[in-house]
Image 1: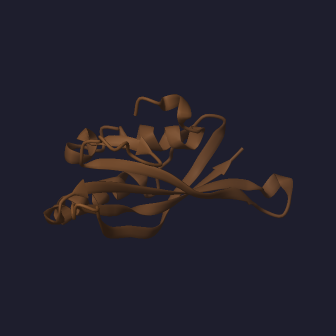
Image 2: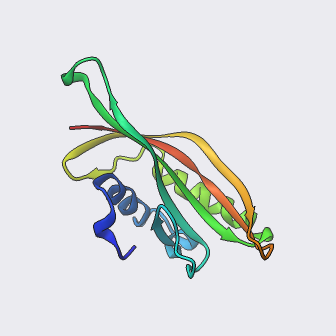
Length: 141
C-alpha cells in the first residue's frame, strides 16, 4: 500500500505481518488496501477494515485496548471461490495467534473471531468473492 501514512499503528502491524515471507504465492502478489480498494484495482486483492475498537478492564492498570479487524481477500469471477479459499487460509495462518509489531503498544494476542464469506455482484453481473476473517487484536499500553 502506497499511502502508508494513512494507517494507524495497528494497521501498519497487520500490513507488515501480511507482507512477511510466511505468505507466498497469490496472497504475497495481491495488493493490500485499507478499508476499500480503488475502482481500478487489480484482482485478487486484500482489504483490511477496522470494525470495532475500545478499552476493557475495571481499573487503569488492568485496561487493555483492542481492535477488531476484518481481513479479507476479494477475487473476481464466480469460478474464483477456490482461489479465495486458498488466500483465506494463508491470511489465517499469519493472523491467528500473531504477535504484531505495533509502535507504542504491545500486541499480545491476535485471535480469530469469525469467518467472512460472501459473494457480491456488480450491476454488470460480475461476481466478486469475499473470503477472510475477523480478528480481535488485544493490546497493552
